[in-house]
Length: 101
Image (cartoon, rainbow, N blue to C red; front, side, top):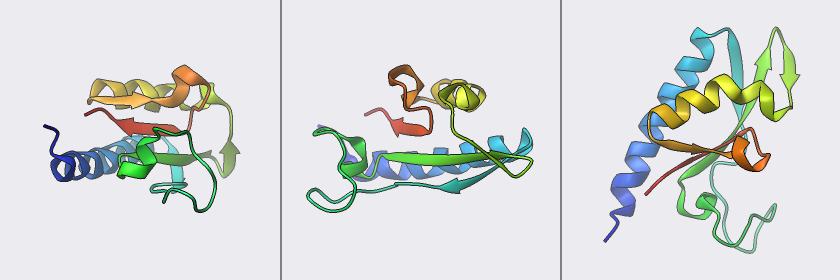
């Protein structure tokens, strides 16, 4: 059985590492959707990890410019996968980072 609490703690720690990695590589970030309550706000897919507090959307900036393309997140996406996550760039949602459980 999956320990959701433990997975959420791991996810939070790794999001912090991802944000630091972004800053050390010359980016700045702001946070997008980190949690969604079913039936409220912007809809997510039926099995979205946002509902389990295991996904976050990160808004990426370079030199003050908002980077909106999936490929803009490639470096961060590769790092995220290296530390154990799933990156949304594989389904054309480059700013989406979720934790595998």
